[in-house]
Image 1 (cartoon, one colour):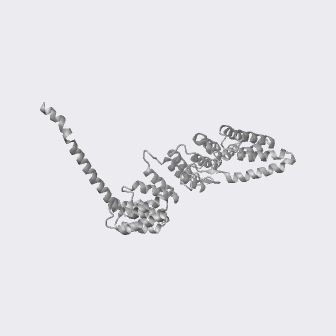
Image 2 (tube, one colour):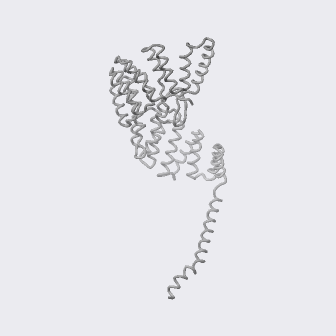
Image 3 (tube, rainbow, N blue to C red):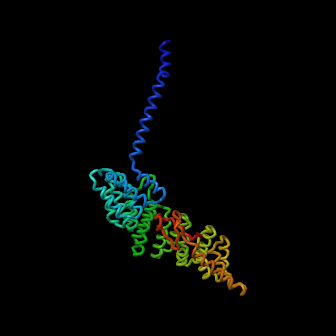
Length: 389
């Protein structure tokens, strides 16, 4: 009975002791925190405040003053160098990281990190060869993945597609396979080979692109061009037509080529009907001009005009209205012709300003289509059809 009582009373008895120990420990921790806070230079907080205010110039000056007081600080020197690079002061960044690299204390992982930052400085300064050599040397350590990502960017910039493919394959893993990009790299090789009339190499690279990404519409566009160049017009029709199953939005880019492949077989009517069918199924396609021009040759002015008008009414937009006014002006009352022509001119100017291709990733706009966005460097992000922006 006495033992049971002690079991109950002992925790209660020791409770004040535990409370005192906790209070004492908290006081010690607080003193440590306050002591550490006082040891951080005021300039460090000023630098942080400047960064919050997006004043990188003042932030760099404040941080440089802190480093003057603590010149051996690895982290501060590394950060200031990055800040200089962000500001475009590449010479200062290079000197800062080179000095850090020369320090006897910068070894192992610290050295790899400084080398990585130094390579980025060189890349930012346009000294791509130096950057590439450093990134290549980092592929064996803990910075391998980050180094390869920068190498991939360099190889794309230099249009060295073989190295880009090799690097992308090394980067591929379960979460990100890079197959989408690899297909585009093979398409670049195929396009170059086609331009040089090396059709066997072009065909090989097209097949490699489709092996990497069977949904690559660009590969079938190039394949259609290869077949056309070799006079294999039924195969060209098949290649261009396959784009409907890959991504129908790109049919606008091969509409005329598809018609010409039919025409080369004496099947102009079938080719025109296929384009009309595409427009009726996918109203967003930009095929009205091609359809009107081909129908004009096959059916005459009246029927071609009516066909174009029907397609415009299916999905009216600025481009369609511009075309519609052009078709209707000749039938208008002479008193209205001048005004209609003026309205068409206004719409035409508006088309040039507000109807263009746009990157779906960064919203960069252009009158020219790009497979590789020059602003964000993403592949196949441009809208295949011009849109109102």
